[in-house]
Picture (spheres, rainbow over the protein chains, first blue to last red):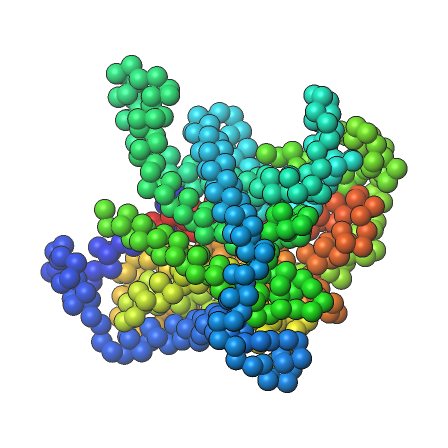
Length: 328
Length: 253
């Protein structure tokens, strides 16, 4: 609730100059808003730095990356600038690579499983925190910690906790009579381990967003439901969950776009290994471009571009959903 | 949820000889500061570099994003909608892609392993987000105020500087916070653009530490604790800005 008051919505009414316009329909509003061209110049004067910046530091690197993926680049050709154009060859190389299928599968599993757990735990905690108790605000703030820590810190902490011989996790399992698990060094467990760490990192984001979504559900609905004799589970299932749907959709979509590109955690914990068992597109791309002594920039860029396409597709869905919600 | 953080603290105080004890000690009974001594001896330059890069990123981000937010929120430029769209889309681009593009460009410009190079690269993490935050905040500034300034003869620049900026203090804090935190935590640009250079940030410091030395986990965890200090300070001093930023990033209105 507090957050929304801090971030005021666009308030067209207040922008009005106080002239006689009363609640004009949207199309008419734009014509009424047309300002003198001097203001257009001022506006674009203020926007010029960011526009230039976007062109130089987003569009150009992206362009270079596409160019990179269409040529046969080596470190030497970077310096001499004589990389031959090879068309889609790099993409074909990537599709044929034995790493392709596992990387695709791992990316999907990593993303979907992370999302489901992040959302479920985040929602459970958000509902829990709606019951105000002493220190609930402080505790909620503390729960943000995993999200604020540098990823290298969380990833190395998890590495040590999951250490086969001296890790606390195996010690705890041992205490309940389960044998040691080679979390990071066994191909059967490495993907689980990085998902575990990623869920931990992603829960706070879900918690905060869903909590603020819960705040906007009117309390009167719950009072009415309680009067009608609905129990806690019914109140959650019939009121909270449906009314939270728009916020949930945004949270999940944004989580999807972010999880798709997770690199640091996996790279730091397992480097995508052992034997590619935790490789995703993001780490594979890095591995190809920077992970070897002989870099394969072309294929690396090709893998990266596939990732961009995936991210942008879901990104567009996200924007559509958000726009639709903005209208309704 | 908080156990890993506790564990990081615990291990950072544990003595070398107790590190591989089974079962691991739940409390640092014979607490040692060896780990922190190692941080002071070995990691200070990395921390300094990260601090410079973080502050540089903050300045660059605010300088670029605040005027843009003002224009988008209040001056209604033609094409502003498209620009907002591009900014949203920019946030979806995976870091690895940006890193490769930057690597290719920096290689030809000779900007690899340089602090300004890293500042620019790190700012790409925050700028689109920052513009959207500024736009959202500045939309809430009453139009009457700006109109009054105009009537008094203030131009757009003066209005921006004397009215909009002072009123946007909260937005500046939120944006600076995130810009600093993201650049402080950045690993992908650091490892691709600064690796092996004279100026390496703390994320690389820890990374190399793990690589070269997987014995002294107390030193590694002590470095991790020190590297987490900005986050801890930010959380204590400015938690409401953090919550505002997270929410604004996800749900625009």
